Image (cartoon, rainbow, N blue to C red; front, side, top):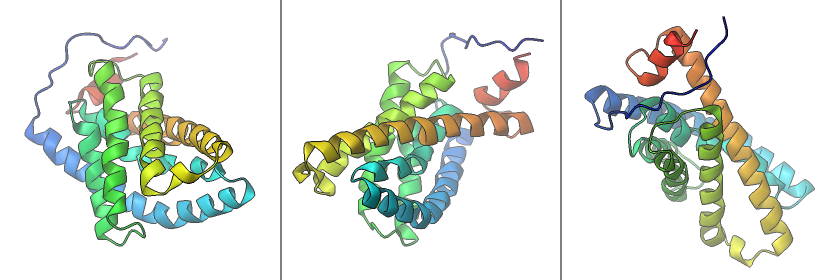
Length: 205
């Protein structure tokens, strides 16, 4: 049987439930632990890539954007993307992120970047394209923030252009599409049955 590719367009319920709040907290902590690991792996990858071509380190960014896209794709309520990303960044900072409080600023900006995309589709569409755009939005927000917090405003146009392109690509792929596939995998296990993401996965045959 062919899988349906048309997402539902009915007006969603945007009211937060207790299960949404609990899930946001759980997702935030889980992503924070992922960030903590990626702080080392991604940090090394960033340095190696940047040493090869200044700006190429942006390709390592995407994993740090997972909180916002996962929160938005699973909970599907206003504020979910930014809330999960901020919780994740807070956990990472509290457990010893090398960027300290700067991780929290990044979480706010990156979560907002993803949140804006979900808001633009009025919290009604959750396709792979929307997921990729949410990751891209988070990557763009990270690039803008680092113009000021990382001193990138003083860098040359070549670096800024390469870094922006890498942030956008990494955000769309690692932050967006990877999150979308993770949600699909979780939905198949039944773990998301209390959410629209899980119910839609079961009914599409």
